[in-house]
Length: 373
Image (cartoon, rainbow, N blue to C red; front, side, top):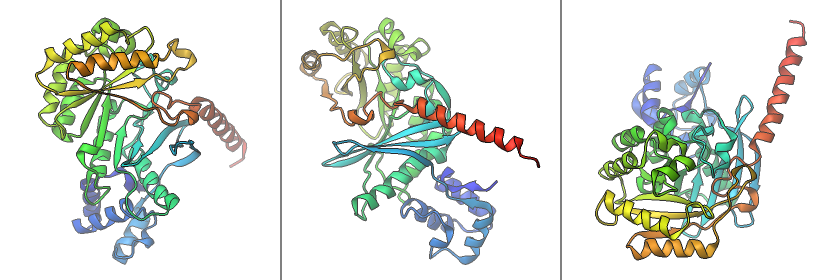
């Protein structure tokens, strides 16, 4: 089986080239062709030695993900459903804004955390994505968008690991993909503009701070353990005291001087004034100064959750309590609702479509087995 070069960060690609008897600068050339120019065929790489092109033909390939569907929202948001084999699919979302282009990337097929308010969690967990499958989402989106928009310069300025899955539960595949995003020979993204969102996998937060400190967003959603245990089951393993201490440790390495807390606003569950006041106390007890920001997220209802979106007036009142306490607070503007691309909606109808794909795959297998050798 040949190697998919999307699976390697620059160091990994350099090691691969060394095994072929090639110098490190060849890996840099190859890496630039793949990530900066979007090349997938070695004979397209004009300044690559013919001898290396020949070696690569037999041992390597550049293979992205097969697109199942593409949907474009009225607000310009684009959602892709990618086939990752075995009846599994993942979703990737591009969100255009006046001053940036943000790509929301998936790290797993499904999710094992099972947060009550997240439709992806209700889908269940299938498997981790490989480094190549994570990187391929950016590789495809960046070069598709350049052609789609008719521009030559970089389109995607920000990446958020906020798609399907818990990124820090797929750590070994995540970090090389992040390094590819950050590399000046890859996408050249700033550490401040690459964000990993976690529901609170404390040991991996500490490792990320040492290995590849990018911006960090923590899915908080509750001000105390009893409520968070119910909304975010991972809290039973890593309760708030441990999570908040890990946030403080991460700040020593973070590219920003704050941690972002994501807080999904659930009607009558976590959106009352008392909850906001408890959050203020939690923040003040954890550390001095303006060390965090809150992003209040309108809930996107789905039947299995049994939950409702908070009234906008309630969200405004909640935000006011935090702001008046000196905590920077924003309310996320929902994007891509009409194509189920908004926060928490990334399961979409993946199950239905992947179930069909799985049945078709089984039918093909049966057909192949029935053909005489």
